[in-house]
Length: 273
Image (cartoon, rainbow, N blue to C red):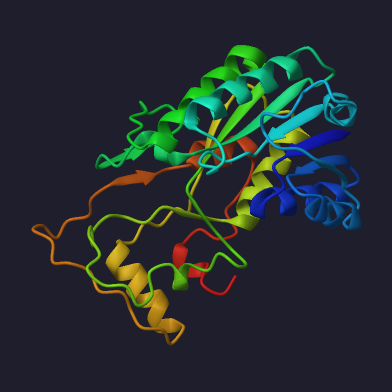
């Protein structure tokens, strides 16, 4: 199988390497020549590409001859205005639709649900508040419009693992708000398992979620994590209420659909993983 991973950043690179190890032919993109050279060293067919580049250039033929496209180009690049990001993603998807690409995986975010206090599942109504969340939801619609039941959206909770160490996120900070807001985190390893399963099982036409099953409060978790590492614990402002607030992401349906169990079901399992 030939798979294109557009956006081989922290997550995309690990995904591309995993797919190569599984025997797939993988085309991966980075924005600089130096980073492209790194892709080639891992057996990935690297190409230099930035969102908005000419889609008819010869080098992109390698992307558009693949079977599956994984879109992992995050919102918020400082070099791109939000309107330009949406415009360029729309053009990319239209070009992909005219090519040999049969299926698309779009990496989105659970921030599309907002922070309203509730349990959210794959079928919960979205309520994007931040600019990034609104744009991600807009791109989800563009993906579905072009590929319909051949596209799967994966909404991820906060990503941790490797260099993204949860114990360091808030260590030493003070005056932090929302001490009782729940934590929604997911480990890189579980994300890779899910994306690989979607592609292998051809689980197309779905909106999926990924998050750990346990949701401690920000204060409980980040104070504990910093203390475990011997770092200065964060200091939170006093809250008017003591009950947990914010959304809790429930991905049980996704796990059942893909036949997976979380390797890291609790944020407390992720500290040294």
